[in-house]
Amino acid sequence: MTSKRATIKEIDTNYMEQRQQELMRQSKRRKGLFRRLTFMGIVFGVLAIFCGITLFSQQADIREKKEQHEEALAEQQALQEEEGQLLQSIENYQDDEFIKEIARRDYYLTLPGETRINVSKQASD
Image (cartoon, rainbow, N blue to C red):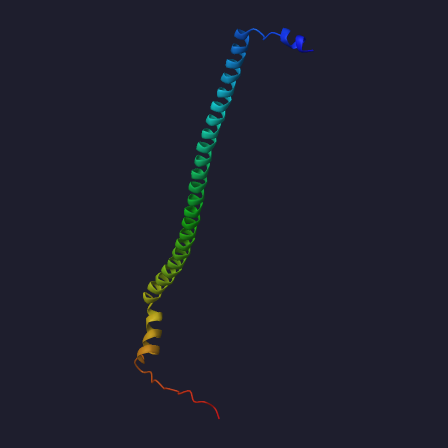
């Protein structure tokens, strides 16, 4: 048996060297590909986080602006109601009958020939 082993020759060394170099190149390419993909993954991850943070902050700003808008609308409604009341007061004060009523009630004025009688309200026993 030992004589058969001695007769086995190595395969052509040039072919073996080429094959070994090709395997080394493939290994380097795979490592380079893995590095590039890892780098791109990290870059895209950072971009995704940045976009998420930006989107979240914009949503918070939009929510705050909506609240301010609703408050402004409520204030505008209140001011419009107050304006309506003031316009009604202006219109009332331009009416002679209203002015007479105010003068009688608040200033105790009477027309000529009238006598004012004050009736005090007392608690009934």
